[in-house]
Length: 168
Image (cartoon, rainbow, N blue to C red; front, side, top):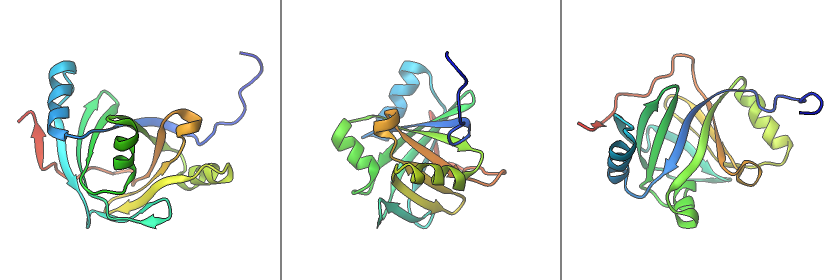
């Protein structure tokens, strides 16, 4: 490679998860488990009050989803089945069908990463807060081919206990 690479972009320290949008969470967990051996899946239903202030673009929305997470070494796989309408997940399903929607990344400085994209005119697709963290989906689809999810989490962050585990 010629010359020296300049800049470190948003300072990603690691990829935390791969977010896949699905139509049927149970079927998808079973397929990933049977065909690829991915599991166990920790299953959650996320909606208010756990999901608090959620904005799709500039519009405040009600967001509800079924979520399943499985650990793959140092990276988690996240399956998302939207329950509510009018959000990035339902839009993705309508436009693309099921598939990889986003990469969740850990950054050195959440606010600085948001500023980095804003200064370059790259909009936020969705942002919000939960009872345990804040997040932003950056609309990097044209630039990177996928959405990037930034999270602002405390060092001791842990998901709450799952509602269910698949396989049981």
